[in-house]
Image 1 (tube, helix red, strand yellow):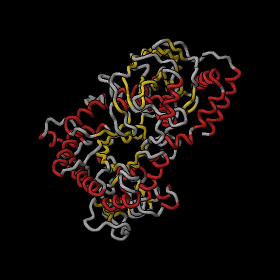
Image 2: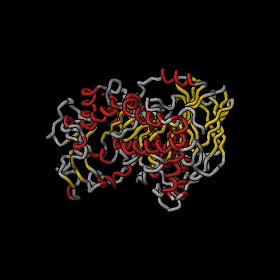
Image 3: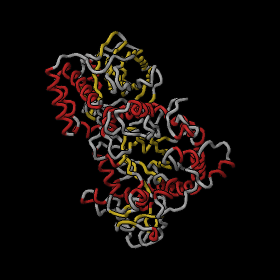
Image 4: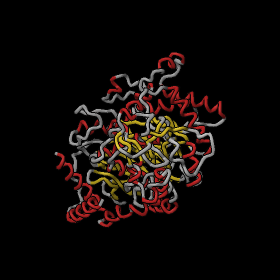
Length: 597
């Protein structure tokens, strides 16, 4: 991030010489936002601001980390070998091993232990580890596995959920078998159980409806609905016997095609004919796991786990494209999150072309949980709305995080190779001031009268309504938008502004006296620059905000590391003063916009 800091310093120098006027962007329209802290209050899960392990080494204040993905389906915990599947020539190699610290490279379960260490660095972020169910794990690190070496062969070790004999702390490397209960037992005895420093949750493998394509060397047949239920029940029972409080996530469905009929599973039509009330595969899976609980006397599925990558297309006809200078393509990304929640919204995608029966997605998932397995939590353990290198990606990510809070998602982990702007959006919610301050733990009523132009989410913390945090976006590509923010329940006289813009993928401190904001009674007026997403920290007075920060629970996930590493990000901007900071943001917007054109 050093080049971003240097850029900020240059911008500050320019701002110091500039007059304090708002010049970027043409005059635009307005949006009305209503906040009422007495209505629709609900707790926000702290674990929705997570990332997958590909991003765990980035400077992002994540509150959950998932070790998952295609490579984990054939991960051998005894040796840390893994297989890339169709992602890369079905290679069995040391991909995981070489990414581990020296002391863990030859340690059993090194990947899981490293996950825990990374979670501790981010102040006890939630740890989610994948267990194997596809049938085989890599037996070596000798490169490509050819078709004639498909399992069963010497290139693979059999995966069994239950050992059936004494569990060892020294796994047998010569028995050609890898046991999942022995893996969990090893982790509990090495690191602690789920309530005492160990792995918090276990995922029942990864995207099983795709195994015949992603892992044809170990599972060439199409996975059936009955198979995934049977394997889920058996493995979950094995985990719960060792660590009863560990949370089980399943079935890690890859996307819409898996939600509906498990990617055309051979037994789906028969199941649907026998159970016409099932709307989609998710109903069946939840119902079967509830029956398993009734039969076994313990809950065997704690969290319904799905993946979601937007299929929305812009003018170019590509899903999640990188045409950041095409206004229509940018608009498609910024509105793609509407398919998660908005009844009647029709994105341009194959899903809508085939009927989009289960859009909006989040309400349909909730309906299935409430009908077939009440009390089951919801996780989105892989998702990405794209835009890694552009502010539109940060805006879409910020909107998704607000929706996860609003629709009771328990855990969400971003999956992307590069995610500069998305990670900045996560920081906006978890570490907006560089001192670990976050969005709040209680969502309150917040509505905008034009979601196509602007989305908004508001929260309070620890039941203290003297301070409100508001995340608000301007999705307009070219124009400023005036946000008229009305707050019911009292007058608020202080606002500190933070935000993301097109200048750089980081949270900028726009100061507590920004000329873009005016306050009159119970109304705050905010002149939003084009393509921005902001955090307004709103207080009855400045003391209310300062007191809330002082009392903030810095033991909350993600905060300790944030305080250590992110403090410099806001300090530089704060030094240039209120006027210079606002001009800095404006000049940056002009420079980037001209560069685009």
